[in-house]
Image (cartoon, rainbow, N blue to C red; front, side, top):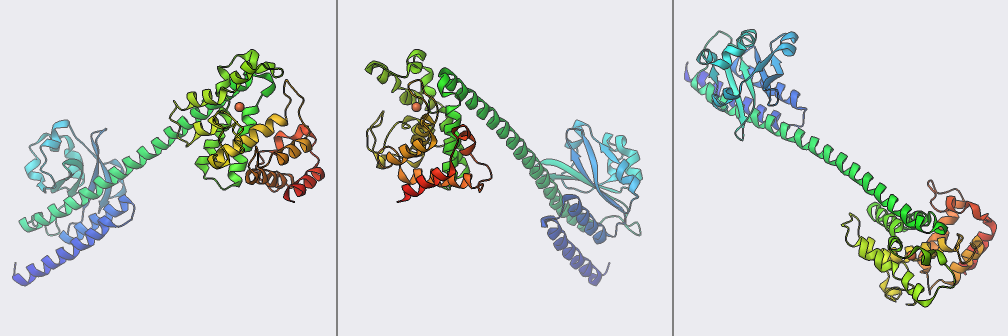
Length: 408
Ligand SMILES: [Fe+2]
């Protein structure tokens, strides 16, 4: 071969390698990307037929991924099968002339497929010491053998294609794992929520009068937190805190809880232990949400420091606590208790307004009323307050009057 032709050939090879590099790093689908790479190889070496296989380790098969110059039937029917020892006999990314392999068991096992593919060179593809696939090249046009320089270039190309296959397998594995983790997380989350709901029902069942109290507290708290623009995860947290805020009552004597009125001072102090017990129970659980145990510990605090258990004042109470303080008391006012009948809604509103600044935070109260107003106007898609107040014969006009009185 003269020097000028050799130089031209070399430049063509270089240009093809650049093309191949671009193919390997492009964002095309894997099969398309590797098919383009295979076409670059066949063009570069004037080989009319070629096939690219991907290794399926579980089936111990080389599966056809892309072909050049073969009929469609070849694509669907041809697979190469491997035994455990075959891979060890391959030289990574090195072109193996088929006549060298013809004595070996791998060739014997796949003789028919190799004949069908008119293979003359078999290149096992390895990346990071892992067998990932193979290339089978047919005869060159004119039938000349592959020269050493061409085999060197083939080795480089094979390595590049191996890395593409390896990365694609890794990516698909990661995507599969991520999807599986997401599924697992979702099912754990469901179990978590169901367990919390069951606990909440058990708390409310202890005191017949407060049936569904925890659930309503949770719904009201969610509505206010959303209105205040809390993040989704924090909204979920206050929902759980609402459901579990009275969990400490489970330990307190049912007779004391149901008695309601004429409690002795001993019984009062017994009942007032429940936020601390709730805290002690919940602080042992590693929740995926922040501050649950603090919210429940302080749901009987007041802005003026006259609450329990820690007599905190306004500046020491978080918005989450202030929300629970309001909605817990509001639900107590609007449901029957052993010691009194439920208040009418306007009475409850007057009470909330009256206690603004001493028991309840006014920003939270305003938010609650404004939201209820929007629910009444039908402006809220998924109302969380109104559906629980239907049995109170809500008089919209009276509520409006109260609201304007509050803003004065
Ligand atoms: Fe409570």
